[in-house]
Length: 174
Image 1: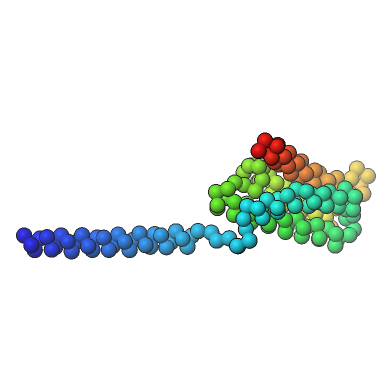
Image 2 (image 1 turned 60 degrees about the vertical axis):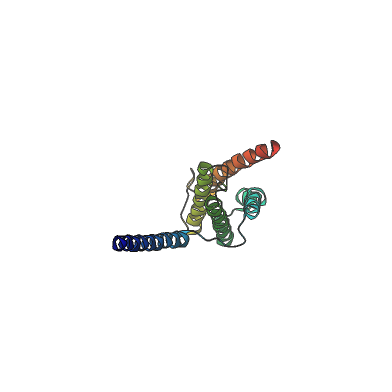
């Protein structure tokens, strides 16, 4: 009887060891798949990135599009494209962080977040086309990209304003 008990114990111990190895491998692989984020990322930082973009960033962008946009000045267009790409990268980094930590999306909802990112990219792309010399003839045949740039900006501004309004309402009832 002792021999069968020793065999059963040996089989049981081997099974436990194999199970422990499998569990260790699974845990190690899941940890290596987990996203790591820079230490400066936190909810407060991400809120400030959004506030800056919604407030002074959009005001600055609006002033450029409405008052200072001139297709012949490629440097100003380049700077504006860089501004949009940089802010988009910061916002996406925060959005990824917030999603990974279970907080929320960077903007009001998944749909509004995606819509705003698409609008930022569309404005940057339209500006890049102007910078590359694509012609936008108006009804008189004159190159006039202003209405196209303005339209892209207005779409972005409307989406950001919707987010801003929702956030103000949310703060009012907290």
